[in-house]
View: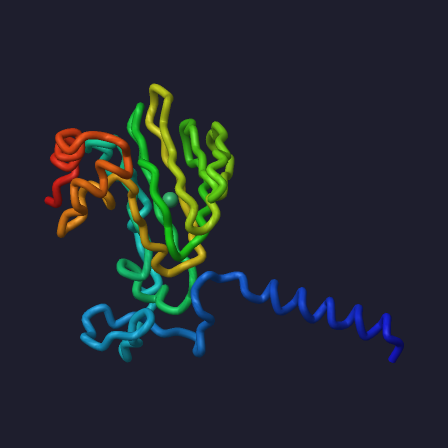
Length: 217
Ligand code: MN
């Protein structure tokens, strides 16, 4: 075979290998592995249960708006492996996020997944920040899509006067969420005041005031 042809073949094989790794989660090793959420056995994911049915792959969780009557004026309803056990090992999940007028899904990250949102209705200001501290921001409305790369801090804000909602898809069965403010000011045990004071260049009483708003419930 000519050298050029071999090179072309190697490039094509490399592309196929890379394209095959579309999920952030590990690959599955069998058709299904419905999570046994009650098992005490710890593995990477959940162990498989033996009695399974179509209901393990079904949910009405996202059919209706969630209540946004809270401090941030938004609610994330997760349809992940913890609620849909059939998702175990499959590397995908969804959420629905509802926003009251003025509602904010505060800056947060998903350590295990990229997120892509589709606006059901309303209008949102969305954005993510790269590790170079560059903000990528846009206003999106019903029918439109925006992508938040894995691990990057991002947010959505409803600046409108009517409610908004999105469906969010993730390439993980359990993306995980760390909300920056809650993680730093609501951790238990508490992050030392002097760490937060120095990190944010604010006084200890200011740290304690913010902590009081994020005290673990
Ligand atoms: Mn998110």
